[in-house]
Length: 220
Image 1 (cartoon, one colour):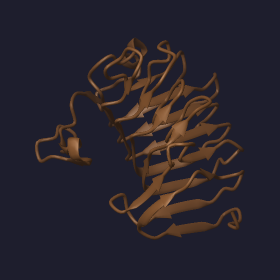
Image 2 (cartoon, rainbow, N blue to C red):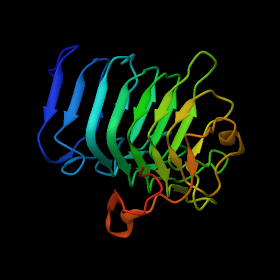
Image 3 (tube, rainbow, N blue to C red):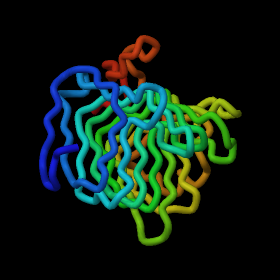
C-alpha cells in the first residue's frame, strides 16, 4: 500500500495469503518466479483486482490460487476499467459466482501474456459458461492475449470444460492453446493459424504440476 506510481515491488519466494487491490496505482509487482511465489486468495476474495484506471500496472511471476469472486467474476484476477499487463503467471483453482473463474475483463485493453489458466470454475449462471476467462469489453476495447494455455476450466452448473467466453466483443488472441471441449462458437472467429485447440499435455496436472510434458503440442 505504500508503493507510489511508477514503483516496482519485488516479492520474495513464499506463499502469501493476500487479496491485492492495486487501488489506482500504476506499479509493477514481480514475484521471484512461478515455481515458488504464490498469492493465495484464502478462499474468501479475489487474488488480485485492477479496477481504478491502472493502465500501466504490471503483474508477473506468480501463482494465483484459491481466489473467490463471491459477487461477480474473476476469482483469480478481476480487471475493470483498467488495462494492466499480466505475464508469466499460473492462474488455477479459483472460483467465481458468475463468470470467469480464472480471469474476468470488463472495459479493458489489458495484455495477458505467457500465462496458464487452468482448473478454475464458476458456480452459477450457465449462460456465462466460462470457467477460465471471460471478456466483457464494448466497442473501442481490444484486449490482447498471447502465448496462453486455457485448458481444463469448467462450470459446476453444466459444462465439463468451458475455457472462455467472448460475447460479441473483440480480442486479439495469438499463439495460444485453448481447451478442446465446449468452447463458444464465436471463439472460432478469432482463431488463426497461430492458435491450437487440443490438450496441452501437462506433466502431472493431477498432482499440481502444470509444466508441459516433453510431448506437449505447445512446445516447438
